[in-house]
Length: 125
Image (cartoon, rainbow, N blue to C red; front, side):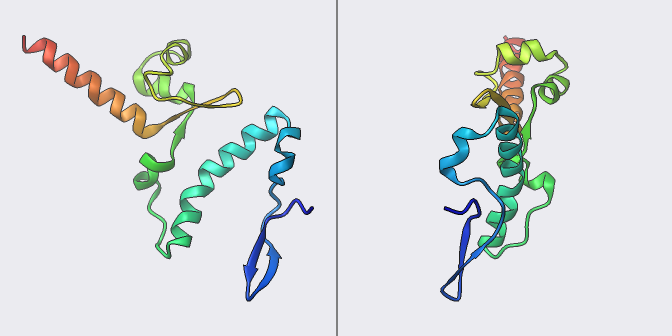
């Protein structure tokens, strides 16, 4: 079986990209998996926009859907350190795939908004 996905154009199957065959994913190294997942997160919103015949949204507008942050980026955004981010990953909405931990930007924004509302509630008492 070919390692290239096939596309049906005019009834003929044509190779698109050199992506791994789903059956071979288990044979990829962790480094290869990390690269693959990061590329897929970056490509997904653009491919979806093309499929829906819509122009891709600007990067800032796509952030809630596709922007995935590293622990270092989250730590910087929250003015804390990576260790704190990892210890609070569940509350921060982390997504973990075979050891790769990423944080959807929208989940971080939601966390910040919730904490601000809680702080305002405490301050008004």
